[in-house]
Length: 259
Image 1 (cartoon, helix red, strand yellow):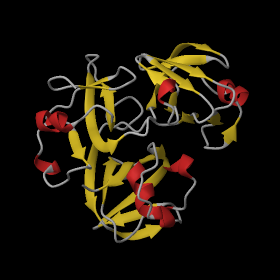
Image 2 (cartoon, helix red, strand yellow; image 1 turned 90 degrees about the vertical axis):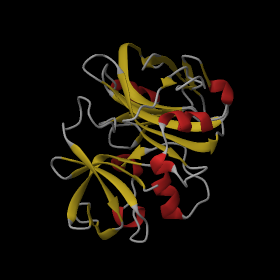
Image 3 (cartoon, one colour; image 1 turned 90 degrees about the horizontal axis):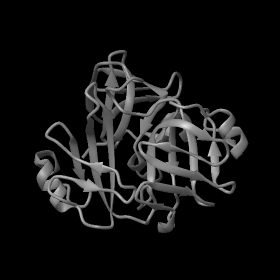
């Protein structure tokens, strides 16, 4: 880290601001009161950090959420739009990172179904959002480069999960609390008096999966509800508090554990 910034192994520079929601899983006591500068000061080389951002009308990157989760296992994850050109069955660029695909990686289509490398590239166009994970081999990601080896995954993604950019509705609010109703019929939850519809493109935070299965370690990446392939009634628990970002139509943009 340098003053006010975090540089990932992929070379992406994260700059939290006063508008960013920062969260330190290693020390949650004062997360809600933490300044961006104090948060960055806690980040150590080798920590796992996850960030979400969008590009505003001026071309600047706006970081909406940055989280420190502890020591990384070496996995690099990346979500964003694919740039042109696409080299079929070989690779593409995402947010300035050159991604090289391998035939032994795992590939998923937009519906979350497993496919092969040919099926993945047949459905891929410039501008499509993808979700990528390198696997825990530290040699698979470096400054400006990611290689999807046998442990790597690539998923086509209908929505990039970022509030405020082109694929999201313009207004959103955050609702915090425990669900009082969780229904698989129509995939609806209720927090307080707010009915919320969970869509296939709703981003489910990795910590939500960990809480659902009771595991000590979070899965490596956030994913969409459509790709998760879990019934809502098994994924969310009435005794757990969540932060749900909701758009103007009452549809969930993202669901994360409350700090």
